[in-house]
Length: 181
Image (cartoon, rainbow, N blue to C red; front, side, top):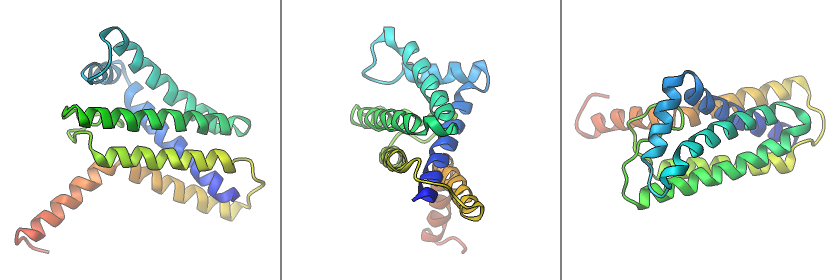
């Protein structure tokens, strides 16, 4: 279980690090994110700027908390709460009929959809399992290395999910439309 706990810890940490970096890499990136938050339905006008700041701060806090062994459970528990909120927010946006693009990892043209809800719920489950299994003993270097490699690969899949979906849709769309293989 130690390897699963390590992999889930790294998965959540890398995903939130990429997300926080996308929002905080420079002032314009955060302004773009805050502007996007302002356009989401259901948020009172007064709270919009604060919500953008809280999201960015929570993402940074999660990265810091999962990086330190004695705060891993707190970081993963915070990730569960944040990811559940993201999933609920995405459902609200979809139900409101708003075609807001996903701004999780920087600018994207892909509107929030079921894929984003499923992604957030899967990460939420991963964080919950990681929180329960954290601190379950020592790891051997080879196993730890494999856990880290698998976690980073899974995190890259999560971060680039929209790009991969577009790539696959384009490839399969051409083949289905009579294009070359």
